[in-house]
Amino acid sequence: MSETEARLAMCEIGQRMYARQLCAANDGNLSCRLDAQRVLCSPTLMCKGLMSPEDLCIVDLEGNQLSGCRPRTSEILLHLAVYRHRPDVRAVVHSHAPHATAFAICRQAVPMGIMPEADVFLHFVPVAPYDRPGTQQFADTILPYVQQTDVLLLANHGVVSYGPSLERAYWLTEILDAYCRIVILGRQVGSIMELDAEQRAALRALRSEWQPPSS
Image: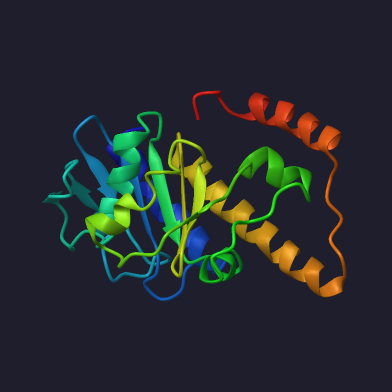
């Protein structure tokens, strides 16, 4: 993907996030690798549904801003922590997706073994401990989990997902929030029935077909 294509894709994903109410006002941030030394990211304090390609910023791997008419997102250090520890990752999406963030503020890992889509696409959604957003300490809270999963909750904060493309990283956030909504509704209806061990094993086989073993 060229830089021009990446800028257009990031704005389009931002519009989808805002339209699906996965971020409110100026919530959330996105990034993608341009090359070995540069990362394209969303600016701070701007609605993700209103971004244009020229609003986006470029930073180096230390978070120093290289270009852009607006300041870079204050949470770029979180994105860079993912890139440093997952060379296969090309894009990161952070949001306050409401149904998933409901689990994050309760500091509850998202339960698996309930729906096929969750076990295949999400697999494991842990909760990283709380720290003040925007700091290196905050970014480092994900390190124990970043190799084990492609989507996780940030305690009392939100969701971060990542993958080989902006589209794939965004998918995980959308899938997670929809699934969390179903779980919350299911608990209100009655007792949720879990899949058995054999059924879950069959889903693990499907997961290996959906994405490379390295991720």
